Length: 135
Image 1 (cartoon, rainbow, N blue to C red):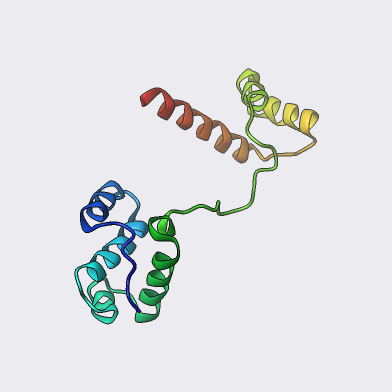
Image 2: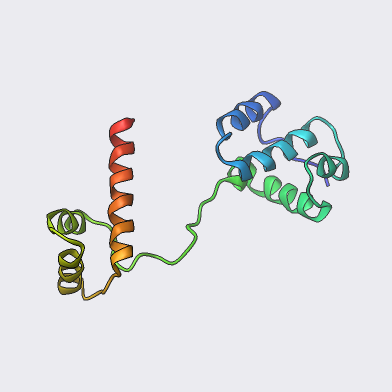
């Protein structure tokens, strides 16, 4: 099986350097780079410490979708019971305690969150707000 050249080698190198923080995508792109450089699938797998079956799977994904093959498009995990909205954010912010926030959410949405889950939601909101302000 041969590799489709969706990108030239220079574009692939730039994409690899941009994806340094996402290790899974980086490993897959390094494997594709080895194929671009002329290594066989078996040798490229050995160089990247993956099985040959995994290598052929990654190659098949690359040939079908190109660079989009290694970008996660689906969300993992169970969806939230209540989507995060401005109303929910205000509800948590305006509550003086976790207990009040929990009761308000139960009253408004009919869903009972644990105290730990309310803390997680509020921390996540703080992180998102910090990142938006940081950029």
